[in-house]
Image 1 (cartoon, rainbow, N blue to C red):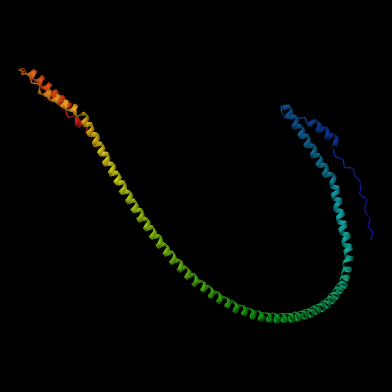
Image 2 (cartoon, rainbow, N blue to C red):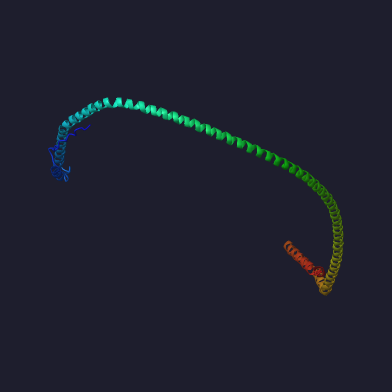
Length: 300
């Protein structure tokens, strides 16, 4: 069914302002400042002018769009009416078509079910055949494994018996080695004990010899020291007697001099002071006599 397409009317959209006017207004406002009261007032007036222009544009937009909205509602209602008329024709046709389509779908589903059941039966038969083959193969494999296990068990038993025999031989060898080692260790201990006794005997003999040598050297040193001391004392005695003999004549003379000093007759004095002076002099004379006598004792 052909439908007529309406030709839209071309309407020129006009507002109370142009791009040239906006550009001119932009040029006037770009350098405005609020640094001074006059500048502030100019900015306020410019804002008010811009706001009024915007308001007038919005009012004009609403006026221009009112007819378009009414036309859009009319277009929608006509489309809905035409659609309803077409659906009154289309829906019964769909019902008739659906009856045929449903039957075709039923027949196809029935055929698909029959094919599926045949396929499932074939799959079951193949599966049962495979299971039987697998069961036979498994039973044959199990029989083979049982034969191999029996052979393996016999081999394991033979190996176990051989291992027991080897272990018995090893234990016997180890026991023989242990006995031989014990005997060797006992002989080594006896040898070490003998060597220890010999070392101890040699040590005692060396210690006795060293002690005897020390005592001998001590006796020799003591005898040498005693001899040297006797010789030294004899030399000192001879030197002392030589010194005495050398000073003996002078010693006799000094003793005679001292005796002569003490033998001088004392004057007979009467005064106490003179007697005191004489007493002091006699003390000094006695000291002189003592000093000049006994020279041989002083050089001994």
